[in-house]
Length: 97
Image (cartoon, rainbow, N blue to C red):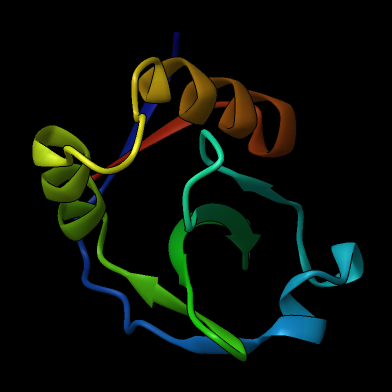
């Protein structure tokens, strides 16, 4: 497994449902049937939370904190799903810090 470390902060953005779900704007995948999604934007994976009419990007740390303590959502095996999504869509796993 190849990791690419990036160190700069990225701004979080909101994407309306129609644009988010259009694969021409970047590949996406729902994470374990939760309201969390992965989407490739500008060649990088982003974590998005589905709202009523949009998808709101959240920092990776926010997603990881939710995954670590969620009693509501099944996030078992999420690391494998994220790794496979990244390998399929960008060719490597990206580590954000």
